[in-house]
Amino acid sequence: MDSNTKVDEQLIYEGKWLHFKLLHFQVNGHQKVWEYVERPPGNRGGVDIIPIIKYKDKPSQVIVIANFRPPIRKFCLEFPAGIVDPEGSIQENGLREIKEETGYTAQIGQYQYNGVRIRNDPWKSTEHGLCVIVDVDGDSEVNINPKQHLESDENIIVYKVSMGKTMTDEILQLAKEKNYEIAGLLWFFALGQQFNNQ
Image 1 (tube, one colour):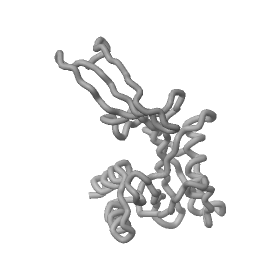
Image 2 (cartoon, rainbow, N blue to C red):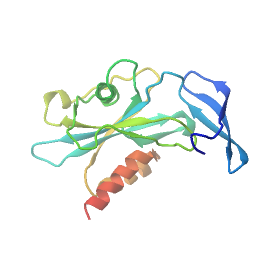
Image 3 (tube, rainbow, N blue to C red):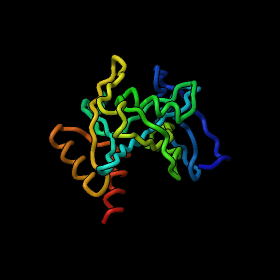
Image 4 (cartoon, rainbow, N blue to C red):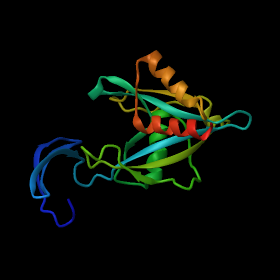
């Protein structure tokens, strides 16, 4: 399917957060129908935050959360994330999300690939997000006893795991002990740490 292919959309269900649609198109002369979901018009996408806690006298850690996800009826280990508000930059939204979900105060990190747009499930959704890496000063007084600022329908537990090749083992152990699922973005980040520290 390319830009010259005739495509028709059919709205099946219009919810508050998601629209369910059918896409009618042709591939090699064959009619196809594809089911997918998308955010309502005007949505700015999401922001995924990778928070790295840095200390003066000990190794860095990564903040992860266990977020209760109703579709799977379980908690899922993942990075803090959220829908981008109509106001503010992606970076400002990312800093707000980590403050609300974890209580930590962060700063945008100076990383080469900060702010890359990613798609987690393009086979069934038009959803996209920007990945933002933030630094958290683990020695700062404001981050000693962080307090979450959750909305009434949020159920989030905060954890810290080690950077480096032990990150995969720590995540697997936590998932096993608590019966958590593991989000793809978090797991692939952990695998990258594993391969980078062989």
